[in-house]
Length: 565
Image (cartoon, rainbow, N blue to C red; front, side, top):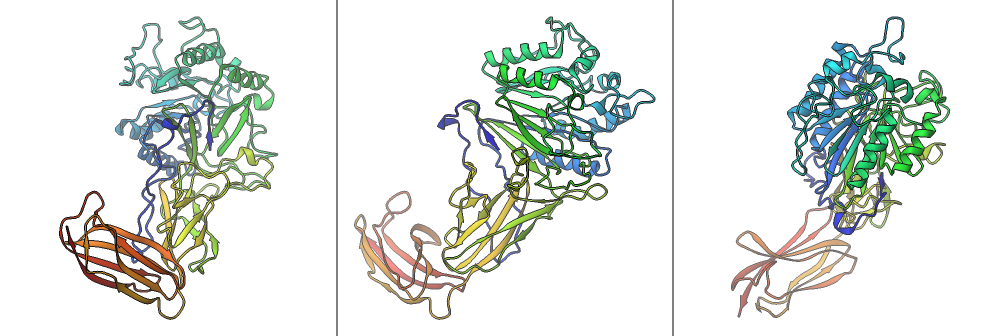
């Protein structure tokens, strides 16, 4: 998903990914090691995740995988909107912190918000539903985190003046705070009590704070206004979203799963305030799955797929058409200020499966599809299709498309056919999200799909007809004068094939003169002016290498050429 709340100049656009994979057709189809979405060459990348719930049935599988794969993108910071586990006991919070030490080892700072399950429920209250649950364990366990999350020295950002923890900051981890990373300010608020109003008396720092704020919304106004005046992007992290983007959902989740379970006027208040302040995005958890929605021109992302068992009730299913799947979100701020977000799925290794033909006749088109198994064994089983949500879904606009891209290893053989709304980051000559390719010329090429760090490829044949490929390959000269274009060879085809002509010397290619697919009866004359790829070739002998390629063994002809002054 891409949105731009400020114009993005050409100089700040994402660098194009130069290639997704290179395949040897004799080997089994390998996994893709270049990810989709591509890691940006410029700008600042963040990762947001929520509903980690490491102690859910599949949390110990899913949560570490989310950490592992997001680290590979090397984000500038990781932001979490909670819940960390089922209840805010010291043991639960410390276990979550040990999982997150992988980011510390990778040199990637993380900042956390507070969820309703991060508070310690009092006796008699079910876990996660005590609006006055204690934060004392939370403040103690995370006190050693860098300021402004905890009390340790802040993470140094070489792009800005160093910060210090002010003397007015009380001991213990903060439950609301703002952190600046590169071009963005991330503002963390605590609505884990099902209401900001309920949570305000339970905050660290307490209100009124050192700046005179008397509530979290006062703090939001000040922190967002300061960031906007400094030219920063403004992102807000909360636990409970203002809306439940699932239509007509049923138990086991309360309905709707928002502030006050839909009864709080703060939902509308927060949306109006975010719009007035020019907030660039609000990031939440609370619902186990992946959704998005908009309010007042502000995008909201519910990224609750980082570990907890996805909710599925009567009439609901897992997968892309319902939002119940596991993943995390990448947020990229480009140098020009544009913001790109991607919902990235995680899969069981090597679980992607491709559906589509192994043979396609020349001139025909075909579509391939893919699906993969997520890391569930004990909870709800999730097989995720790599496609856009169905147009038939009543809340299609609220359903994110998992990040994926299709690639051909040889566009001379299988050419990608673009779909509507293609991603501008793709290599247009080789990639498409549509999964549709046209068979252009006989040969074998790999069709591959990549999603996150998982990928799968299949070799597809575009067959030639029976009979000869070539009528003749005839040299036209054995010598040429440098600087004067001279016809070298004439190739006449009996049926469509790819013609490659190269000038070689000492085992190296000096110049590629022709790489094209010619039709039946095609006759081409190839000339050379004696220049190499970068400069005039030296005097002497060269080999003219002519290859006619299809799905069969190539037809090869070579002859010697001498250059003179």
